[in-house]
Image 1 (cartoon, rainbow, N blue to C red):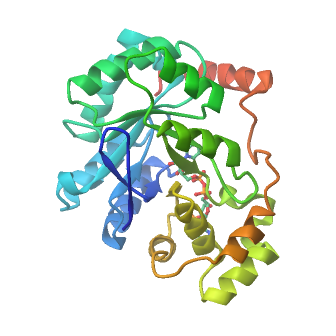
Image 2 (cartoon, rainbow, N blue to C red; image 1 turned 90 degrees about the horizontal axis):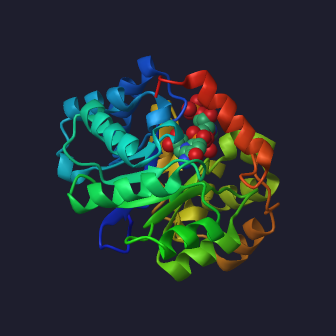
Amino acid sequence: MEYLTMANGVKIPKLGFGVFQIPQDQTEQAVHDALEAGYRHFDTAQSYFNEEQLGTAIADGGVDRSELFVTTKVWIEHYGYEQTKASIERSLTKLRMDYIDLVLLHQPFADVYGAWRALEDLYEQGKIRSIGVSNFSPDRLADLGAFNRIAPMADQIETNPRNQQITPHEEMAKRGVIHEAWAPFGEGRSGLFDDPTLKAIADNHGKSVAQVILRWLTQRDIVAIAKSVHKERMEQNLDIFDFRLGEQEMNAIAALDTKTSLFFDHHDPATVDMFVHMLEERRGRA
Ligand SMILES: NC(=O)c1ccc[n+]([C@@H]2O[C@H](COP(=O)([O-])OP(=O)(O)OC[C@H]3O[C@@H](n4cnc5c(N)ncnc54)[C@H](OP(=O)(O)O)[C@@H]3O)[C@@H](O)[C@H]2O)c1
């Protein structure tokens, strides 16, 4: 495994296993398989409703806690100083852990400032080893860093060959923020697994398109969070550190960028409406 080092010296494995959209009754098995495949970095969130199953699988998994890197994210419903603090205590209980390696604010909406101050305090108390954000654009990231005691150490944003996030990556690198990629495969949208450019590069190395994408991200010094419920794919997705993409291949992939989200645009007011609606639907669940 290769690692990146966050601004506070904490090392983060470049490849993580995400459990978004894995149903509760499949999460324990998936995490067991992922541990067996060799994953040591796990990514969940309060809003995925499977922190408890992840915690159980890790507790039973036989891997020392010190070898693991676990991330969770605070859901918007829990933003604000006191609520965020209480929600992290609940996450710790569900995860059956006495510290979390990385806690992110999941979305850039609602009382981000109150929530951030709670993360700062829990970080200083040692309950969280590093703190960051998710889905923050470069301006929001700069703002949060500029007017608080502690600047975000990571920003997890959608990043895949169709939405490469070149400018946000440069901004993060300038500010010493780790760039994490969610939906590295774009969940397969826009025919990504069948893209002819990616297929040709994959054939050239005797690898799969998925492996080429993960290699491309990690080679750009981006932490990739991939999800699969199939053990052979979990193993395949980890097996990316024995080859390197050449400059021409990196340039060919760069040409696939549409600079457009495959999901939703965080600058669009309709996205805020979508989250408000989601909050109403899920109130009290996360
Ligand atoms: N911060 C955020 O707002 C945010 C948002 C979305 C996701 N995330 C994080 O990022 C993680 C990954 O994102 P994601 O799950 O949305 O999408 P993704 O990793 O881009 O795509 C997952 C899809 O790809 C398939 N797949 C995985 N490996 C494959 C392979 N080697 N060959 C072919 N298909 C493969 C999976 O199918 P099978 O499972 O059937 O194998 C699944 O359908 C999440 O689990 C979560 O931890 C964060």
